Image (cartoon, rainbow, N blue to C red; front, top):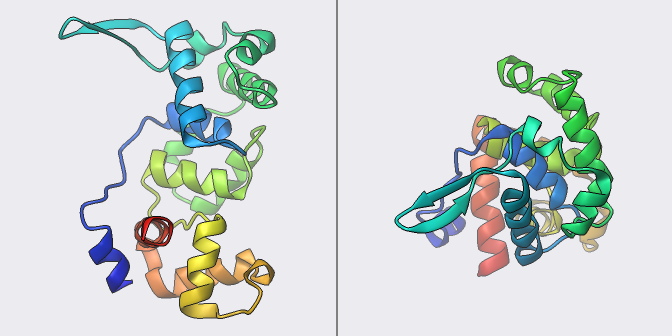
Length: 196
């Protein structure tokens, strides 16, 4: 952990808008960063509001109401692929009030928040944890992807076949070791393992 903190000195967890985080992480499924960035830019340009700053044009991330104007076909044309239906259905869930951003934010129990997020189309355990970490400041969550599984296995578990390492085992280890700062530890470990 000490080496990863030294290596990643200065990294930060952004304080992002929850709605934007939910949609962005649904888009991130089986995707790469340049493609995700392009999709989000096209969504903002198509459905967000134009802002001129320093003589340059920018677009806000669309609100629930603004994004609800997009059909599945519209989203597909923006390059979302199979994620188009997921983004459309999630937008409708929030538009109709079946799930409310305010309720997610107010809920004290992280487990209950995760259960609610897992009901959204395109949200699995890792995406739910990312949403809670980056959009809700739930620093106790520990999102697990290939890189995190790899580094936790190398440092602590030491299974010859890292693919056999269970998510529950990593979650328990992270909770025991990092307590309510597991998400911050995860960011350092992820960055160090991926970049070093």
